[in-house]
Length: 426
Image (tube, rainbow, N blue to C red):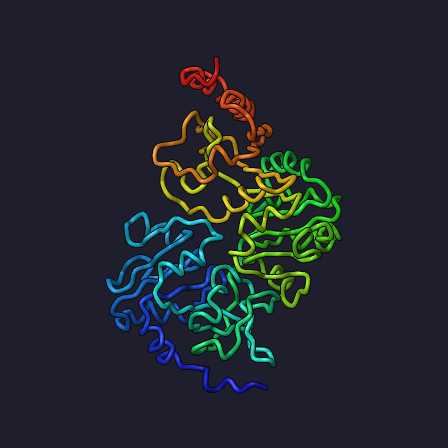
């Protein structure tokens, strides 16, 4: 058994280590070490000047809200708490593609320290980062780490292991992992999912996200065979497909028979499923989300969502009514990857309306202030509860007509009128 006594630290010792750095990179989602971050929040005067870099925070903290002049929070994908801070000008948001996060952090941060959460050490001296690989594993062996050891973190396989010799110190604090609430599948989700599922062939490799629509798609695949998973975010929906024998990965070109992901977020059922699961490989996001790697899967299928689409086919997936809500994430990574895959298919899903059917999400032009995530050149299929519109290789005229056909019926006449004003329809 490896002696870890010299690396176990008191809270004050951890704080002392962190205070020597001007850039702290924090693991995303359940990679977030709550106890360590609480110490930063409670002792801001330990830092003369520091930036804290993170995607997808799980908890509100005073430093996120800009309460301390010496601490600046830098977000790369906003959650509910940083969204509020950004709206108030209290934190920074840096645009990015998810697969470029490791290299982006390399260029922005000077000699950073990494803080994250991990499972208890094994007999060989390795900790598993559990639900995470994301951008953090890029820094293993390249930058110092401070970790919170938590018995609730599952031990997963992949490149997300770090040795005792590679960390500055750790503290032990057991806390249940964050779980996402179950999102019920509504009739509207089921309708959208049907259009997508009927276009997924046996032997396809899937990237699926979270929400009612992805859950509905997964529920419709129980009769499919030899499905593979290559996804940035692993969610509960995959579990049933694995247990039903649908997910085998035998047709995959890369990592055959393996489920590939860069982070997992869902329920305790998911965390129990991935614990020690040899079928799963957790890999760095610059591997998983690199469009060049995604494109190696001939039958790659990407399923994502957006908030608005205009007649050009531009998808505004980061803003709501022109106000920033999240960030790009991996939508463009997979949208680009499927475009170069031999038989790749990319689905962008959305409800046809918002605010109780008072606003059409299909628009002649995007709302002022909207940010284009998936460009008109990269969009493939757009799906609403009223149908599916194939955009790739289609003219603006044909796109406009196809999008009006899948808009809510109450808005079609108005959309057609606006299209004629713009010269997109005759």
